[in-house]
Image 1 (cartoon, one colour):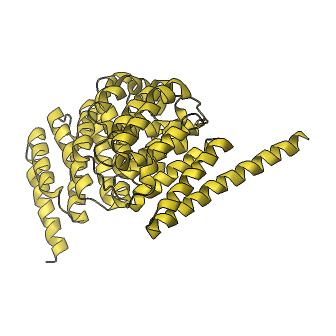
Image 2 (tube, helix red, strand yellow):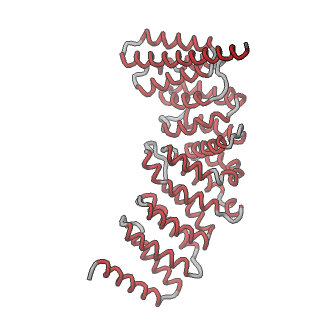
Image 3 (tube, helix red, strand yellow):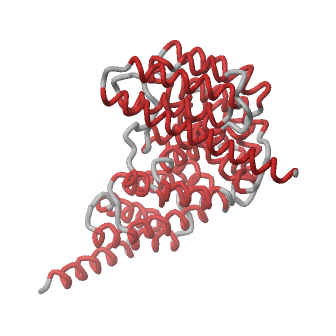
Length: 398
């Protein structure tokens, strides 16, 4: 007898045994078998378990809430840790769909908590790790979108923000994953906006990095809609960015800096920047420039108003980083100088150039001198573009 025939005989015996049990006992027996196979790396092994369990869940009259929560947790947590085949993800999606139709509230609660507990913060988030969690994100958004009424969502507001923030953080490590997330997220963002406005600040107290990623996602959706302002998030963003990007004890993950900095376009010059964010930038550069310089660079690059009044003081605070032995810190400091150049007029740009030339003249290490000379070239390129634009404007007025 072949292995395939033996498997079929074994399955027939299990089905016969199940048929002689009561409905509840049959479900328990099916769940017991599922528990033994769900973590099996073999697609065939856990695929058969999912198929059999899904059929059982469709057939029974009632599934206790505890069973629903347990099945969601088992399937999703194992998917996050072990699965990598599209077929495996399809099995999980099908089971979640069946369970949500039988008991939406329990399915949602379990999915929200499982996502948050199974996907912690990691600083070395790679593109492959981000891409691997696209199915998890899709299941969450699909389940939220299928809510029959707002009551289902209102009872889990903080958990919804937490799970979406977790997904946003994990999607931020890959451009492809982020694009897919934003496309899916845009379909529910408007529905969830009241929840965001009331719960993001509370969530940010304990999970600022995940809250920052979620705010960045909201900003990208609004940007696609050509929104000019997101007033209810501007103040929260300023507080979280200060804590996570500027005043952090450790260097923030670069993928988070890159994603979240783009939200800066929505903050107002007054009071968000000049009264709140700018003083914190100055403090951060004095306190730990080697940590804050990356966040400062990202913020300044994405501001959409002139910085002539504050540029000299900010530049002065980054002078020591311009000649830092660490190439990444040095390049970030030069990036700050270039960002200030793009947001300032000619008088300020001249001061920036003089500062870079002074540092170049004093530098002894060849690598530092090369970096500074490249920075001078980038600043000079900005001046050239500005002069060309000015000349074009003058010709247009003639």
